[in-house]
Amino acid sequence: MWRSIFRNTALSRLSIAALSITIGAVQLDAQALAGVDVWGTMDYGYLPCATLACSGTSGNWNTYAAGGPGSPSATGSAVGGPNSNLLAWSAGGFSPGSYLPVLRGFAQGREEVGTHPGYTSSCCYISYGSAMARGAQYYSYLGASPQNYSITFDVDGVITAGTFGGISGTLAVTNGIPDAFGELPYGDNLAIDNITFGDNGIWAGSRTISFMLNPGDNFYVLASLFAQVKPFGDGWADASNTMTASFTAGNVNQLAPYLLTAAPPTTVVPEPATFVLIGSSLLAVALVRRRRLA
Image (cartoon, rainbow, N blue to C red; front, side, top):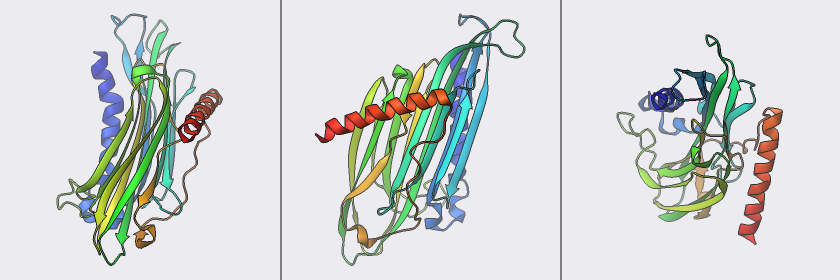
């Protein structure tokens, strides 16, 4: 019962939000899909006693969605928990210079005692959060001859919710030719890769994708970042120091980006209790980066 309840809350909301760009895509100019959008949710399940045999309920603490095609940056957050002390947030924008997407995300989950309207006893709230950020940049290739390009992207994060926590980052390059039916609004993939973390730890990953451009080519660079703490998870999935990307091969001066903006803020202003968690997570990530560079 609980699995079906949870599946019909957070995951369905994210699926609906994900369709917002796809619907009607064929009515837009190719480059008009460039932009940043973020969405996320804090949901809960409630049990009036400490055993799964109880008949409980589920619901949503808060949901957010911001940005979309044409938005050079976006930030959103949702607060949840019986004491309003849990957070999900995400942010996105484009880095100066290369104007590749820069994405951030953070999600919490926790089991707490509280009361719920309609129940005479107080027991167990199972709160869980999801945060998503997506960036799409459109480029025109100005070169006079074929040229090979490479993009390296990095995803760092801290997970304390065990296997109930997860962080995933994906980068793709498409040919910028929308499908006539809108099923592939950004075009066919030229290159794609993913970095995923799914257990406790301080994580740092890097991938490189490569692709060839010919004179007159237009293309999208698509980035997505997902941070989640699933039901029954107690902790957080902190990707607030990631995701970044850079061109590591090819002449960037021969690429004309469609949207221009600076990178988004690395943090939002969370609840005081959450501030401590984010601060300690960022310090740990900084130490990992220092070791990796040493």
